[in-house]
Image (tube, rainbow, N blue to C red; front, side, top):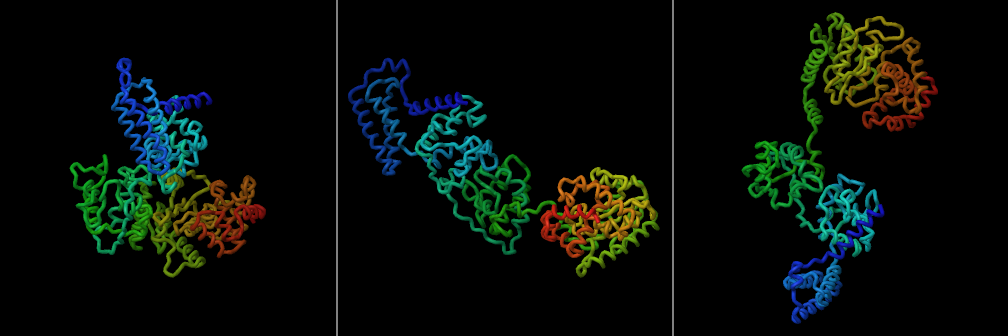
Length: 616
């Protein structure tokens, strides 16, 4: 490492000593050059004396005048074509004075250093990508340094990390990695800036480097839409701007200096003047780019923008370039609905009749994917669509039992006036054969494992896009430690009931609530078996809070253990607090926070109490 650093410093020393270059004769011509005439020697001496005034001009902050003196001396020296190896004392004195004068000129960070960094360094050390934890897009970020330490030691360029890395002797060590080595002039500019104290001369250290020298545009005037427009920015312009344009027109290196991440940025335009002129599409450069040039210049290298979209932009500008959003400074992406939001709006616009018709189509489509060759029947009630391949009489039994249980749940857990349990009828799939039920898991649930002890499940998605239960008809009698079809139906309807808002809830709560609403006696063999399973499963938990975490228990145990957890919570606060817990979970999806807010205790505390109770 010492050797590499020493090599870099040797390179830097060469730069320092050889920075000032002059135009001279070739070696053979130099050898043949005659001694300098007296008048030339006098002119050189006069130039040297003039240059001595540079330092005073700098102190007086007359830097432009100082630069003019240096430039005049350099130009005259070049015109004289004095050989590089000329030993005359007047030449040596002038050259020495030039070096001193140049070094006295202050190096501006914004005007001189920032352009070098932006061109060579910010690509890998910017706001979005920070190789080595080093960011150079602002002076404030640059001052923090990176993984290897601070970049500059003010006053000591040879001891500054940035100079060592830029002047490193080998490609492996030198920056920019994979890029051209910085010129001696650029390297000397950075070294002199550090030698002079590494001073920041911009307006705001948090702004992009070089920002203070960028001509400031006048603040944009956002005119709100008044409803008379035929083109909506939010509906007709923003979607394609977000999806097509912001790929190139965003971030620190936005193409053409034109960022489109907010409406204000879109309106303010880029480096080209008059990008958008309110009321004047002919004077708006953006219209020329996307609609009138042949071939069209934008979007660059793409053919994604339709003519109708470009015409809509033209019309929008003609109508005053007005804004029909809520916050012109907010990310423009927030104006554009996601596919999920579009679908939610479409579903919300459906009438109840349309939703019910959609459920019937869903039932047929889903079943066709499961068992396309079987003969099916459909029975509808006020709240249910019972669909499957048992005979129609059997499905009517399910519909009668199911509707009665839905009404019982409605009576027990009061709904608001005119509220329905589900938007559209809930689909109740009933399969005659077990392999058909397992196909629901394989085909519709992405191959989810189906333990032999599980014969049904519920699915209620956000916005009630999909809402169904599916069960294998196991019969009206079942082994003492299993559920009959009648009890399984009640359990699944309870699961769909608690999930009816389409918000995610923990499996233990969904299945536990469903099991609780069957109405089994606590002395039933099915529930007793659950207590034993709970005791065994809880002994494996390393953290009591995991009682309330999905995935803590085997799928075949979740329903019965969940029932015991729900019963424990009911004993701790009754039905009212359980409903509050459901509301909290649908709001935050954070189990620990929700338990703390409703029961005043953490998940760990409640889990420890549940385990201590033995599930009773």
